[in-house]
Image: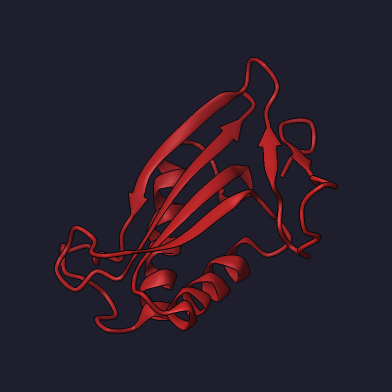
Length: 136
């Protein structure tokens, strides 16, 4: 990520959590790209990795990267994410987060991870929304 495009903030009044960014900002004139939720769908529209939280998370990341590329961005340009997981179990949330966190590597962005009741496609367990910032 270009440090002149995004500023990450640590909130000293909040819990110190390694690998956790609380907020990010971009300067005026930067183009924001708002991506719809990346779903674990194969090219033919079928759901990938049925029953596999980590497998669906990996497919979501793959589809997210394709959408970013189509918009002229990369995963390093992402400034925030929301990761939705159809579950009531923290273990499932952790399995998904491990995949997402690994995909972003050292590129830490403010993210929200939460369990939801149901997602839109048959057998869908994971969806990842993102916002990217690109200097034109």
